[in-house]
Amino acid sequence: MDNPGTIGAISAIVAVATAASAFMFVRISDRGPKVLLPIAFGVAGVGLVVVGLAPSAAMVAAGGIVASAGSGMLLPTLLMWVIGELEFAQRARGTGAFTASIFLGQFLSPLVVLAFALALGGLTAALAALGVLAVITALLLRSSQSVRKLSLQP
View 1: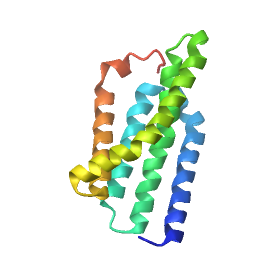
View 2: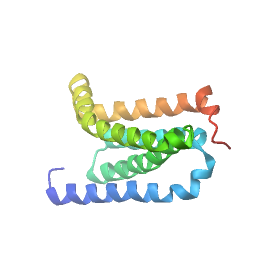
View 3: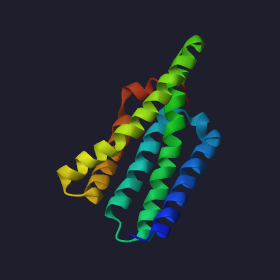
């Protein structure tokens, strides 16, 4: 896949999937982080695995849409979890720290993917491995007592 038009179209569709998922968060937010966090990591992880193993541009797009839908759900879920645990007077600081961590993650993400790609022999293997790690994170979160103890119920 080396056609700039195809790459741009896939990138645009994937970006819309992130925004659409985040926009739909209002409809599912009442389920709380203990339910949504594992789902978001799992969906994002499955999408990354599909991207990593994709034999075609269409499969890359499909996996990207799934991964981005998970990410679009993940960010507001994490913010709800973090801010919900803070006292009202500390929420602005918490939001600032959360935002800073997002931008730090955006900076570090390509470096982490590069390290995985070098260690595993390529970008596709790195994306698949990161997807598997995200799915494992989802499973660990699902069974974690810390997530179950969240004050944001149900």
